[in-house]
Length: 210
Image (cartoon, rainbow, N blue to C red; front, side, top):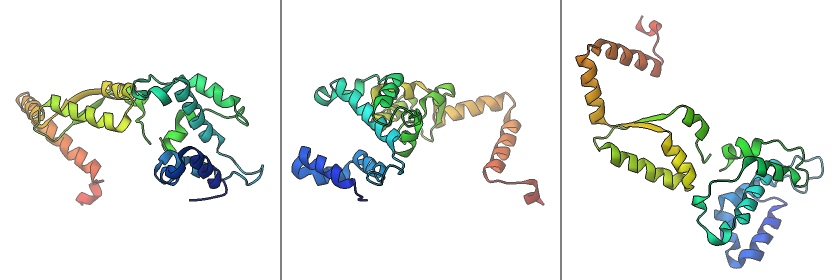
């Protein structure tokens, strides 16, 4: 999508990346997001600008550069910027003095970055993975770790994510626990629970029985 401000974005890219400018514009999701959020530029003072979303990106990148990650790399080991510091800086920018914390807190993630799980919530409610596999638990955990590394890239986030996993259960472990429950006389209870949960999943009611 191109609009009146797209030319400005492309001009900056052209100045910094020359012949690669068009390729970067087309392939960078971040640039595409910025392009989307600058549609109102040039529409006059009554147009609603997306300052919160744009400034959230700005202050995060500013922190990235301030910590030298643009030259030394290894951003994956960064423990993250302080929210209060980013929010205060956001409100120092033009027209930013009345901005709320929504963009930095959640809104931009839900629109763009749908990138991170809500770590706070899953820390309060630890995850149990039940995996339909005969593979041993440790290799299964390693696969979860590898997928998290690919998805989140930031090591601090991956560590918090992995710390939320309370248990990984495979098919052999399920069989052991099922046999133990049967020995303790819980078979009928288990079957009743399976029937109940199946009715809930398939939206089965007493009227259907009639």
